[in-house]
Length: 429
Image (cartoon, rainbow, N blue to C red; front, side):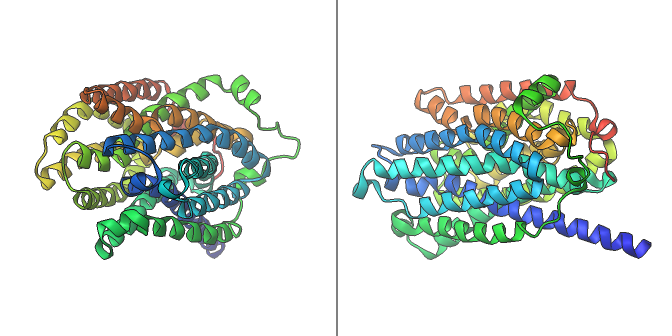
C-alpha cells in the first residue's frame, strides 16, 4: 500500500513538472516580445525617436491583451468541459503559430504597414493562447497538488512563468554576446522567436501525454455546464474580487519586470546590455523565492502573504521608482529592483491557487481565467503603455502613483477574501 502511494505521489509530481515545463515555454514565447522590443521596434514599426517606437510596440503589446479575455472565456469553458489537459494542449499550439509569424514578419522598410499588421495579428493569436493558458495551468497545478503542499506546488506556475522570462532574457544575452548590435537589430531578434516556436511544438507533444486531474475526472456527466452566465449568476462576488486582485498583481508584475528593463534604459540611462543583465539576475532571485513563499502560505495561510504584497507594494512603489530614476550605480539599481520583486513574490507564488480555491470544479477554469484576464488586460497589459505615456507627457512620476493606487484596489480585494487554506473548494487530497 505504501509503495502504491509512493508511486502515485511520484506520478503526481511528474505531471506537475510536465505541466510546469509547458508553462515555461508558453511564457517564453509571450515575453520574448517584451525583452526584444528594443531591437525589433525600429525594424517593424515606424517612428522618429526611440520613445515613439517603444510606444508603438507597447500599444501592440497592450492590444494583444485584448484577446486574453476572449481566450480566457472560450478556452476556460473548453477546459471545464473537455479537461484541463485539452486546454493546455490547445493553448500551446496557438502560441507556436504566433511565434512563427513574428519570426517571419517582413520589415517596415520592405513591406510598409504590412509589417506592423503581421506583428499585430501574431500578438492577437498569442493573446488568445495566453488567455487560456493561465486558467488551465493554474487549475491543473492546483488540482494536481497534494492538499498540505498545495501552495508550494502551485508556486511552480509563476516559477516557470518567470523561468520563461529568464529564458527569453538568456537568449537575448547570448545573442548580445555573439552578435553586433547592428546585426541583432537587423535580424538576430528573429532567432529567439524561431526557438520559441520550435519549443512550443515540443511542448504540444509533451502536454498530450499528461494525466488528467481527479477534480475533473470525478465530475458527473450531468454536471452544470461551464458558461459566463452561470459564472456571473452563481459567483459574482468571487468574480469581482479576482478582477480586483488580478489588476493590482498584474500591473505590479509588468511594471517591476517587463517594463523595468526599458525603464532602466530609457529613464535611468543604463545601456541595453547592462539593463538586460541586471534584470536577468534579479529575475533569477525572484524565481527562486517563489516556492519559499509557497511554503510560507502552506504554513501560515494565504491572506498574510497577500497582505505583505498589498501593503508592501503601496509603501515602496513610489520611493523605489523615484530612486531608480536617479540611479547611476548598477549595484544600487539591482538592490532597489530586488526590493520590489521580493515583496511581489508573496503574491505571485500563490496567485493562481487563491483564485482556483474560490470556485467549484465544474466552472473552476473559467472562474480563474476570465476575471483574471479582465483585470490583467485592463491594468497589466496597459502598464507599459501608461508608463511611457506619462513619460512622454513629462510627468513620469504620475505613473508611480497610478501603480500604487491600483495595488491599493487589489489590497481591498485581499481583505475581502476568505482564508483559502481553510475554505478551499478543491477537496481532493
